[in-house]
Image 1 (cartoon, rainbow, N blue to C red):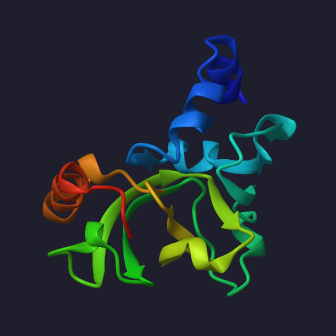
Image 2: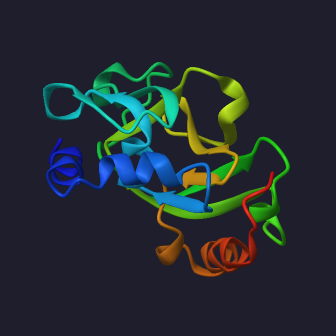
Length: 161
């Protein structure tokens, strides 16, 4: 909610929507959530709408589908499974470990947007993409060699899938 309020207040929301199809963009953590159509955060808020779908809260620790009790927020290292080929995955192992800090996750309406998944009581989309946009739920800057490689790949990326 605060993120979208500030983007709207600073009149950056329309500029971001306009640039989505023109220049490569990487959304990180809150960035992936802001790119969705809607978020449950802050009592519900409309987001940038770059990806149809929602940002939802993890189930309560005692209500996990697999019955295992997990802390919320999801904080620490977890694996990201690459679900489709993409230039930003260059030189990154298919099930590499990245660092997460979040209580919400994205649920894209179109599974073709999912480029990576992670398990934390539920399998969720931890990487989504579309032309010129690659967004991650984790923090590449805190993810050691795999994260640094992802950032290096982004600097070389022309926006094509």
